[in-house]
Image 1 (tube, one colour):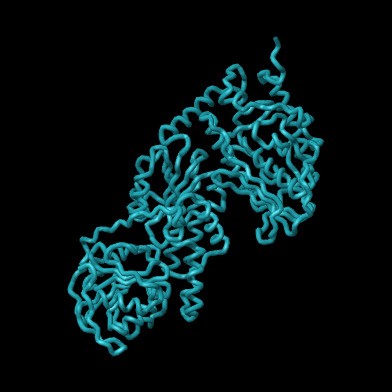
Image 2 (spheres, one colour; image 1 turned 60 degrees about the vertical axis):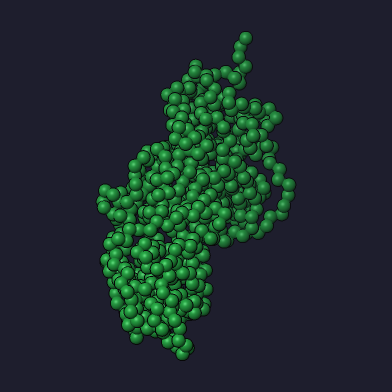
Length: 632
């Protein structure tokens, strides 16, 4: 008995004929496009397109077979590449949108990897495979938004559960099988991925007249290779029977036993390292802190990847001294890190120019460390400083990711600074430290999409109580510090880590220092002007010296913003009380008094609690007995 025609094994002759026909059609389409001036559409601003016209949501992960895992990872990586070209594309009214002109050819050189592709009844690994999910979604939203469908090709086979089963599919093949449509009004395409879904939306400048979306009756371009059969005659394809990794048709010329073994060995390695459900994890980090170092040591696995700015142990840079053992691959961005350091030093310690340089340095570092993200890295742990850039460029789409939080979100930070500025418009330094709007928005979107936030800062953790992992602060070794010398009334010292800026509570501390005749030990730079501490006894010390705590009654940081309380932790380790705000993120630790930002009465009371037990007459003419220091 002869085999059923549609189930016959592919032959080299048939494949050769197909290749020749496709090549001729590619040449023809290229000539037509050049003559017709078909171009990719430019990017637009989302704010110019306020109305949501259509939306498509499709799942990314549909294969449960272990052998297909690598092809699914490859498909998602191909979608990431394509979305960078597609997201934000703005089409003018009556303009022609072409899928291939917008995306470009999917080649290995452009970063595309093997994914599952349907051709001639077979599902097999091919560079750029899986992009049909994106073309299907675009076809779906173009129908919903009542666009004119200029070209669309249905698949020759129906994969169960796919868009073809609903006749909402659009087959693509460079460049002769294309998806093209014209909108009746200006539209913008938003295309993104969550960890589980591909989301494509069309936005317009006005609401369309809503009609029940009806797809054209199997529209086929004149340049198509074949005339696909109507929907009701298209064959139902069994993916398990036709996939090159699972069909077991060794006699087929497309069967590549070496490739199959490679895919299977990769999946087995992932399963041994942590299971196919978890996949490989990539850590993209910035400056090293004891808390994050311990977290990585506890959670890393042999199959995981590590991206660091520079090898701190090799170059003796303690701020980047990450433990690089165990990881299967370590990527560095040394050029970007050194360049950022040189520029920052040249611009000095403070100013808008330096802040801008830091943001540009973070962006360059994010691009360099993005090379760590191989297609099989299904999970990512990323530093907050890199987060908005990786999110904007689509590297986190299709992945579960967590964020190492080191500061308040920019949106919250801006809000707090703006509120303080409204109350104290004369404090000029509150105007500074503002990031661009797009950066604030990108970070907010990424934090909302993150599956977990990791921090030791209690103030940051309080903003996201449902998805924050709160780490324990690691107190440093302070055996080399001189701390507990008895403080006298004439020489009562208070250490102010600073810098001298409104956001650090310098104004409130200055007021109380005058009342209580305190001596202030300054560790940071003076940003409010040279005469800010006039009339107050001050001295200057360095954080790295051994005597900055000598004779100190307390270390005080009544800050509105504080993301790096290392100085406060060193004081606590040396047994010196700390007075701080919730913004410092250390509430709950022993010997810490929390005061509200801007509350001079609370700050005064806290200081009186830790100053030596000597009667003090304040401005109110009341004699008060000062209690001995807390924790002694």
